[in-house]
Image (cartoon, rainbow over all chains, first blue to last red; front, side, top):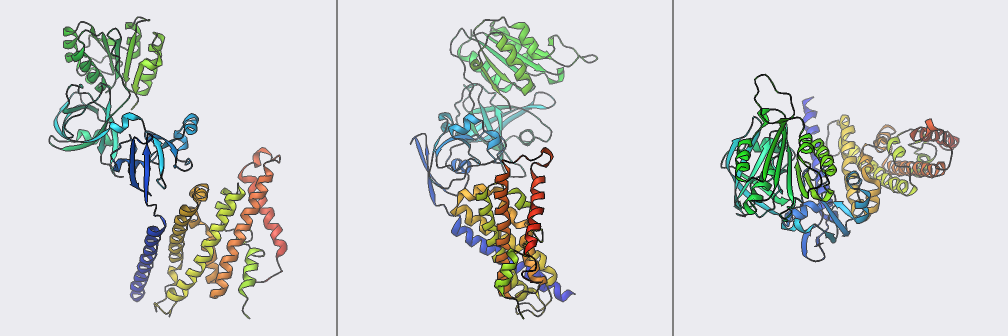
Length: 365
Length: 201
């Protein structure tokens, strides 16, 4: 019996090796697309990349960082670019994430398009300014039982210029290779060498687990800044910030950046969470409110108070507080960050107070 | 008297059609028979794979696996299943690369069904029939090629029939795969009319 195991193993191994060799040779000869030219924004940026890879990885190699949350698996839909020529037919994996209007306009998912020939494409101007940063953890502190504030000192490049409310994509390790997870920048825009994040630990979440386990002095990689939030420079516009759960990061950035430039701007912060255990930054914001009379802070707890729990603020869901405090008809701009349900509810309230959809900014992640 | 490979080829297309008589290779047949163009493309791919893998597997079986074979003396026929599958899988990978390079349109049209040819039981079936019926090299070539053509013929016929059925009034419970299976059964009965023309078993 043993006499046939060895020849059997050797034969099978030999056959598989032979077949694999054949396939490698065939791949070298057949799947060779040469060098392809990527023409971005009508000649603004022309890249030469190796064909055969996805458009997303080709762009990343050339330091054009298109946002991506799922690591190229075609599930997040963040990597949309407009392809004018050379992208091939739309793949079935892209269809669920493209609207009909997008399909007609030639919008594609960069992680699904394979570079086989020269491509002419359009990428939002802002994305061409996105850079990859290497940074070190400067300090980490706990704000609540599951939320941590993490400050990164930028190493290379040493400075970041961003607008209030923008986010970065942190590269986190995962069993399938590095993935990117988006987090809003909570440090104000005038702190150029620092990026601070507020991260809530999501059980089983790849990004939050990685960030919560970081030690001081560890290095991280992230790309950014991304995001469409845009502060109205008009001094008469009232700024409304509504955050839920851990959606405080962009608010902190917006409020501090705003008041460093225009100390008299009218601004209201609404923050909704469940219990007093989830409350953070309340004292800091109350102090800010004493310095800037035009700044008002409302925190609301949605869970009923427990035995012995002290709370002198409001209760109920945050959109009800927004409804209560805002008079209709005032010129405003709103920035929302929190769970999708909260955003929908607050949007409706704001629209009933006269805000236009283009004045409401939100990130639903 | 040895049966001529040409006779076997003819029989594999009509009297012993691998899909309609032996009922092998049904899943791609049911899934890819909507458009005639796709059906022709898939049929061609399956024919190519079936012909080549029949020959390669013949060479491997009689050159390596049988007892006293020129390359390895021991009896390794117990490995024939996995070896055949490995060869088929590698070959389909090769075909996929080939099609992706030279006909991206066909590649996109076939989509996931191209790699699914690997598990198409008709392909493995052709190799196993070759072993069971102790075909020679020429007969294996004829059988592989004929089997592929027969499968292609069946799927193209079905694509044409489905195109016509788009305008028929199919009762609601039968729409979709159900009516296809009924039609396949009828087609099989039709091909039984060829039985007796040629005997290859």
